[in-house]
Length: 435
Image (cartoon, rainbow, N blue to C red; front, side, top):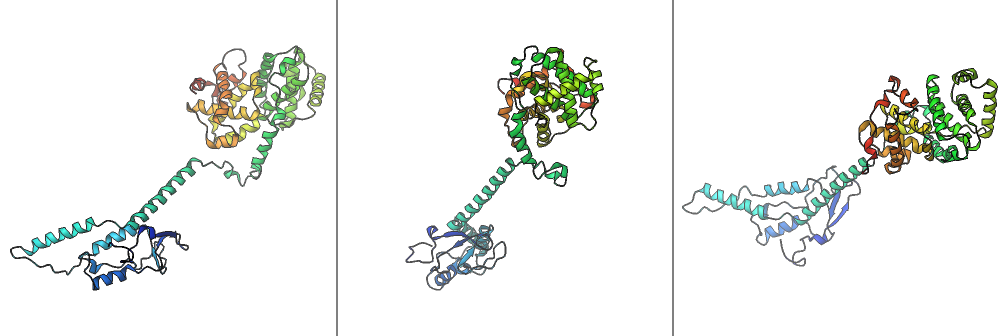
């Protein structure tokens, strides 16, 4: 239908068509102005008065006919519910518009069947040429856009989704899930108190960093033979470094510092503490019981009895949980970080960074490619870029772990108890320039 709005007030222009959301069912509806006339009434006027512009206008059904929405909500007066199947309903109606009893005059010389075929073809052509109403196209476009937006939003949620690593421990009182995040936030703030200067050995006159490495490599073997807890080893090394940073030690007393630091760590971490005599025997009776006890007194006073500090082990357990680790990844991660305990140059990294880099390097070693999930980045607070320098050093330590004299860690992790982690190939690709 054509003409101006004054001559034909029932024509709905696109600009006069408003879109809003049905407040009850959330469906999108098209609202016409309240001063508009129903198209069904217009159709009846056309049929009764003037000739219809199309031969089938007599059987058209008014568009104001009640159509229930997808939720079967009753129609609102003056509103036309729009559903996702509305375009299909329009098409079905158009197929029903062909009158079944229209009589067509048959010309002489032609059969009724031939004329009917021609008429059917013309009628079909007439329907095909009729354009889809503009408001139907607009409604379909809006519904399609909504579907695309929902799909994009779902994809974004999947990409940014983080795993709740504490969901399985809600009923475990020892997991303290209620304040575990606050606990590790405190560890991150206080880890600086457990760190030492990366060049403190320059203040020592009779010992050097290589002697420190030999001592720690030996203590790793002692720790393994005594079957002590893992926490004990990391606290032992921390006590040694903090003591050597502020106290001058002669070369012949360095081993005494080592066994005494292990004794203190055992008293703090172990349930069954080795007796002093056992430590004297393991050091080939180089020191007496009195010397061990005197050194213990000197060390705790020098450290001001501050033994409770966050070591790399504290962060290792939490970060391994974030990495959804298995036994293989756990053995590989501890192998790599114990190699770092021997190396003096790794003192420049805080404990949390060492733990995160060890797990990252272990994942790369096992998979043969870079592996660092969003969940690990969230819980460690370290991105892959921040771990690269430390990770490269760890790879070099792995490469030379079976060479030289400091092979205590290598021998320990070449056993079945630790999954033969030391026999794995280093992640050499992390050393490439393109990394």
